[in-house]
Structure formats: C-alpha cells, structure tokens
Image (tube, rainbow over all chains, first blue to last red; front, side, top):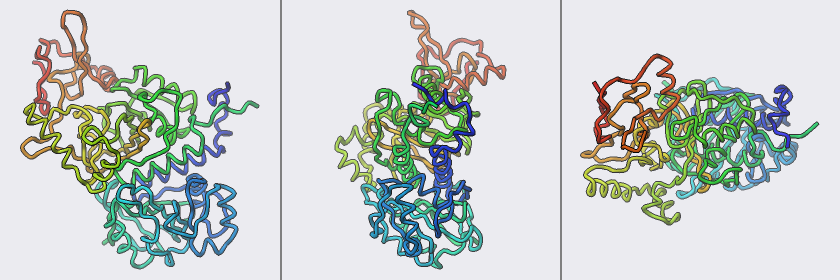
Length: 203
Length: 303
C-alpha cells in the first residue's frame, strides 16, 4: 500500500489537490463562523456570473448531494449557474427555501424574509438553511456585533444589505436556537454572522 | 505513478463535507449536539473515533498536531493517533502545546493557556449530559429544546445530600452561553474554568454516539452549582514531585507495594517545560499521607 506520506515528497503538487482547496476554504469559513465579523480571504474560483469567486469556492467545498441549494432570482436568471452547481457538486436545486441547506443570494436587497428559509426545529435546530449572501463590499454602514466568539464587541462594515437588516437579525436571534446562519461574501473576502450573534448599529 | 490508497487525512471528501457542515452548525449553536453520520475508523470506538473524525476534517497540510491522552503525549492512544495523522496526512506533529495549531485531547485541557490560533478537539464518550438521568433520546432532546435542566440540579443536589458536597469530579456539567447544558467530556472539573472565555475554538466529537458540538472562542461557560455550594475546582493538595508545580492537575502514581506514591503533573508537556526552565521538586516531607483534600481553591505547597 502506498501511503500519502510516501508520495507526498512534492508538496507543491499536492497544493492543487481538491482536498487541500476545500480544506483551506472550510478552515477560513470555520474561523469566520467561530469569530463572527472577522473577514478572511479565500482563494476563490471562477464560476459563471453572478457567482463571486468566494461563493463558488464555498459551494464547491461544502455542498454535495446531501445539501439542497436554493437560488435567488439573480442566480436563477443565469442558467449556467445551475449547470455549474450540478456539475461541480451534484447538489440538488430546490425552489422551496424551507428545504434548502444552502441559499445563494446575489441581490440582498431583494432577498426573501429570513423566516422563509429552514429554521430547524426546537429539537433539531441544526436543520436550518445557511445563507450565502453576496454583498458589494465590506465597507460602508457599520454594525456592532456581540455574542459567542467575540471577546467584547467587534465592528464590521457591510455594503448593500437591506435597510432593516438589524431588525431581521434581531428577529432571527429571537428564535434561538432556531434560525438561519449567514455567510457574506464580496469578491474573495468572506465573513460570517451565525444565529448566536447580537447585532446593533455601530456608533 | 502510484495513486495514494486513501485520501488526505484518511476520510473521503464527501465525509469531510458532511462533518464540516455539522461543525459549522455546532459553532453557530454553542453547546448543542449536532448529529452526524459517524464513520467506522481504523480504530475501535472508545479510542477517539469522534475526535479523529473532527481532526481529519479540519486538518490541513500546514497544521501542527498535538495529541494528548489524560494530559500525556506518550500514552498508547496519543502516540497511535499522532502516528495515524503523520501517515495519512503527513502533518507536522509536536508535543509542545505552544507549537500546536490543532490539539486533540482525551480527558484533559492543557495547562498552558491556549491562543486564538489554536483549535482544541475533544474526544467524547457520552456527549449527552442528561443520559444517565434520562435514557430516552426523545426525552433528552425535548429537555434541551425546552431548556429544562432541573433534573441535572436534582442530581447535583443529591450529591450534596449524600456526600455533603458535589461529588461529581469529572465530566462536570456546564451551561454554554446561558442556553445549552453540555458535557465537557470526562475532563477533571479542575479543567472546567479553562473552558470559559477561552481564546481557542473548542470542538467536541463523539464517534460512537455520532454527535459533534462546539464552544466558540470567548464564550461564557458556567459550571452548574448552587449559591450555598458554589463550584470548586479540585486538585490534590500537593506539588508535582518532578517540577514542583503547585498549580497543575496532578496524577497520583503508586510507586511500590508498600503504599508509597508520588504526585506528578498530568500534563507531561507542562511538566517538561517547567523542568527545562530549572524548576525542580520541593525537597520536603511528602504531602499529606491521606493524599487529598477538597480545598482545591488555594493549594498549599509543602514547606
């Protein structure tokens, strides 16, 4: 039997392996989820518009036949995106946001109410949708975050979210332990806003 | 060209994705046990299959792995898991707590404070803190859903009624971020305070019971107690006989057939680092021959 250790003399060759690419993307999003509001940069991958490179990398590393994906109007308007998802992940696409493990949102202004997505149950709060929301940039309106993963408080600036975003997140927190988790992407940058978070306007 | 016989870090990519999705949910719902499709590993249940699967799913080529078993880097379980990842993932391993980026542990939290760059992965035998009080999974799920933890307080109260103090010495239940009551795995309760406000991410994997849970960094973790019987960390009232540490958790080692024994640090790396810095044993009368007391809050050093 050949072990990886034997064949791994050239780490540069291994660096292009899919296993390493998805590990790097996962580790970045894990750290972001554990430290809400911190921004990490992924090695993004090219995918049809409106995919950002970071969203594509996340979908490729986290989605498979076990995780139905819901697409917002901007994503579904471009049929190549569905083809790309099917080819690269094998994940089924669903039109029902309440059945989705992941929801891809390219136009946050037009996104449905957070309660339309799977919220999990009181017994199984993990059976909920993770929203991957593409924002234009991590600049502009600032939000102050507190909660698990944050020592005192952390400020994150996010452009292009709905005007009532703080209320949406407050309602989401009210449902805890039910609720959805958010991953935000802009270009190759990502940040995460898990449901455990409390969010307010930064002063 | 010979293709490797298995994937990087042993697990196939689909399994890793499934575990990674579970880890993300576990972090988002601190202290909640996420069910996952635990795989058979090339080691028996009870040898850390849950911890190994979590470690395999987060490990990358740039990580440095440390594995401890009851604080020791040198026991069979720790050595074989370290070898397993050296062989299947070709990662660097270390015994020094400060050099590690991922630390897999069975039943201890290292004495050296952890940093934000580290992930602590616990091996968990029975993840459900209420299991010995209520055997039905459907019922314990509902109790967690309703945040109904009175039964646990009754259990601790019965300890006091029977023994005069809370006799639970390990796997001492904690409440995470004022919501879920969680089993911190069979760590001694001496380690419980280290879970609170910890800079490192803490992940828990139970292979046989198929559960993953997490404590994000800087999360409030409170050991359950009563106002008139507050939680007390416990350690033997002695100093390590190798390095003289009076702040570390001690193992009691029987040295002969005449009842002689010595106390040494359970955390072998901590003890070695201290001895490397010139700390030695206190040359004094051995500790209280009765061995231990319950005044762990302020341990006294032998004069």
